[in-house]
Length: 119
Image (cartoon, rainbow, N blue to C red):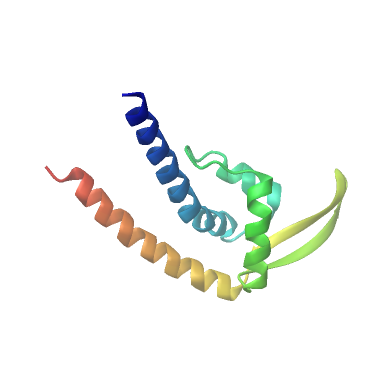
């Protein structure tokens, strides 16, 4: 019995981890939509999403990859509250990708919701 519960918990943990990884990038891009934010701003915006575990150590590698892929641009500004801050903003390419990602996510979400509510 103990082994079975352990395997069920392990399966569920792995599944939830994969779900979070899969939607984290979408959430980060959506958080930046129409805004110019620094990393901690994004973390604060996303921290309100239940089940989406995110920290600064998770977000910065993703933002760096987004920059390499041309989805975001960065600017550095001095801050009266401490060291200079790096701000992130979607590029035109980033906005296009985000629109396509949101459309795809909407299709998956609608289909999944329909399956869940089927009697």
